[in-house]
Length: 174
Image (cartoon, rainbow, N blue to C red):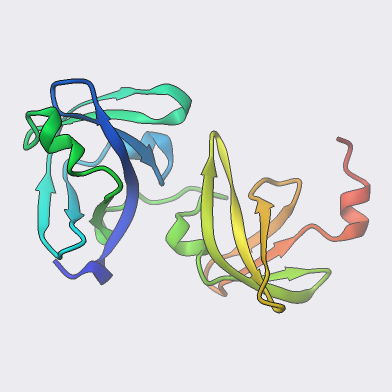
């Protein structure tokens, strides 16, 4: 399958236990992750494999422990550490109001006080929330928590993210 038609929905952290389970960090809404019936992994050498989940369970710190039909030993599971779990983009569940996929945020222009300050380069998941990684006009990386206190509006169609203005920020109670 063409990687351009795939969306990363999780990253394999490491093998978990002895039965070939994997500890995964979801990169989509936690509840959405459990809905996928198959995942695609692509090795650094270009090999592609379809993995079908048999069982999911919650892990520590918003991770998910997954048992895949195709992985039956710790040794096989260890070979997958660090790889991305992908699904065909057209299989992603619809998002609700104020819900976004990382793929929708990457490349967005970031505006602060209505002036362009940079572009979203990446997204870092941190527990229940995350931060957008903004590459500024000065080629510096700035981490902005992706929460209402700092992000005023996201316009995915226009590829724009508006940060809360100074005046608005000072009126918000901590």
